[in-house]
Amino acid sequence: MHHRELTYSVTASLTRYSALGRRLEETLELIAGALILGLARIGVSASAVRRREPVGRQEGACFESSTRFELVGGGAKLVGSAQYRTPAAFLQHGSIPAFPTIRDLYALEGAEDEAPPESNEPAPWAWMAPDQMGMALVEGFAAGFGSKVVFRDLGTIDKSAVANLARRRYAHAEWTFRR
Image 1 (cartoon, helix red, strand yellow):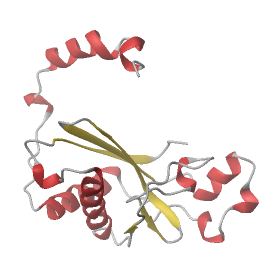
Image 2 (tube, rainbow, N blue to C red):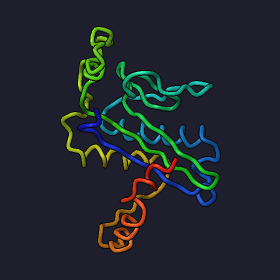
Image 3 (cartoon, one colour):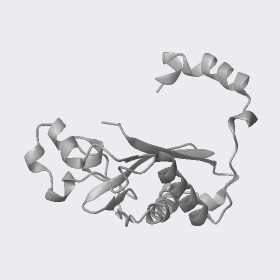
């Protein structure tokens, strides 16, 4: 199901970057606003789902339902997100699929007849180059957070430290699945 999609992540220290909000709802709303600005740059109108209470993911494919501050537009969920928090920091990760269509997700569950009629179209950015879509989101985040984006190439990354971390942690199932 996670094919032909653009993913994003936002990670921040809650003590160093208080502008990103201190509470879950604040960071969800700020990030949703940045994503809305990014999508608008490619002509896509989106809005954030507003609810007082959180609603967990429903049965079925994750793009069949929307939780708080996920983005919807044109009769479908456009961006799915999840956030993990500790007292000191958070990580939000999200997915912006181009394919399959929402109808395709219903079909995987044998419920194609239940799909809303407007759900048979691929996302408006389905044929856009991933780097073009990614740049629109980067610009949306810069505008949404009122900040400057600094690009770095891989030459600034300590590749041996990354390889060491991967060997020590991520290569081991007990670390990955420790929860």
